[in-house]
Length: 297
Length: 314
Image (cartoon, rainbow over all chains, first blue to last red; front, side, top):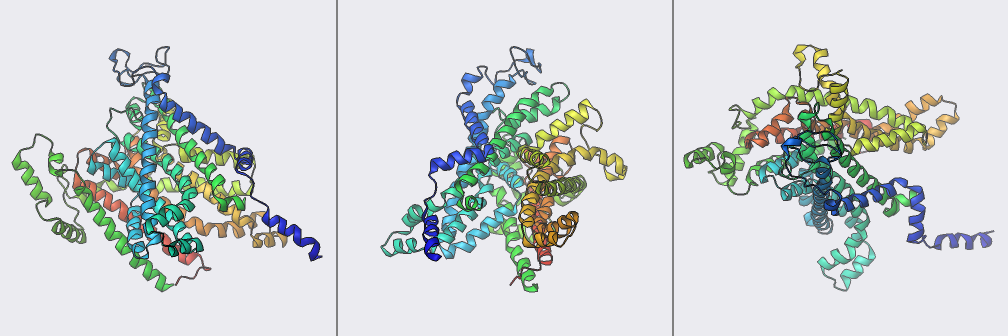
């Protein structure tokens, strides 16, 4: 009986993984959320790029005569307390949100990869670096970000720095755990045996095996960066108020909630949809890229 | 187990020290001279010198750090520049609204998150499950302050059921105080409730596939008892971490909620301190919130040991 069954079992074992294209097709059907999220993210990126074409009016032009005007033909979503066009402000706010969100994820990934590689590869650096990460994680994110912005001053760069620092430990832990599992494998030992230098080993042999979880984490950090920037702006400790950030628009809408409730509608929807799309895209990417989860499913 | 508890307690000490050092360094991260930033461009040389002396900035950094720790050990967080009173006193005055709000919001999160998570897992794929998980995804992505503004508009401005903003202390009567806190607590608890619902669901789904659940069903235990006694009790162990941390997460989220609803709590105090560049006050609030966060983490870890008899800590 074994004679009959063995070839089939072997064939099962060596059957190649389905091609990437097939996996994507399968995935679109199984995870509509991820596809929806990625499509929306693409759309939002396009809105940010073509902000000037989509919203022709100057987002910062003051017009006291049309102060707090409701939706009309000239101002589809009304004006704010300085008579600025809310549609134009929201569309241009996309650039701030995506710019800061991208900056935050880039900063967190860069810092996290460096700390994670060092802590995972050099045993002597592991404990001190990870205790440092613990200390950063011991702070509630938003409180630490407020503290850093308060100390360094309110500018877009400092907001990116502050939020980036908050998310570095997460990425660092992730990278470290991948390095720890890869470090002991034979191909690393082989590379070391033929004299590959440490930095090349880290960059060319160890780092590539951790790209998938890093990209997934980067997407979630992007979402949190967008939310973090909006929160800081709403609290008045984000980028300077001259920028039409969604959080700033919403904090300006707060006192006029009776007279001009339209002020909070569009920026709020834009913010929620952006964060939701990024989260959906992150969930989708995780299902697509993380082989452990794929096997379980 | 005792050894694990002692080790865990000892491990918390360096983290707390690092938190204190980081908070200390906040003031020194300011580019240029923090005092001239603090006093603005109109300050005279004498004023700047006086402020430097008052803040102890004329000492070398390591002496300043030692002084910072010496004062901390005495429970002295310095003097607020603008309020003219000790930082600890200023924070204590503002603590009640923040703690009450955080407590109520934690209740909201648990009362929403746990039941919906369990129902979603048990009725996997049903309308309730899909609806609850969609709502949870939106709840996680929606900024708390926008949710708060929407609640204010609906229940405060349109329906006039609840006060739009402000706070009444508990001494004014429980109901009066609660009326002001209902919307803030819902606002603050929503996102954490959504998160809890998602985690409860996935934990329950994992447990419901276990052999002992099948065994319980096979021996004729009622479905209700299977879910509550056999599944939920086991799924609960990892959830304790999330529930325990809820309070810690929400206490920092209170900063935003207090700003939306004009509640005179510690969060509002922090934002005012930032706007006035009142560094001792900023450091004090950041430090106290961070230490609370570390302590709650520690307590949650310790509770975990008692709850999960399967794990042997060495």
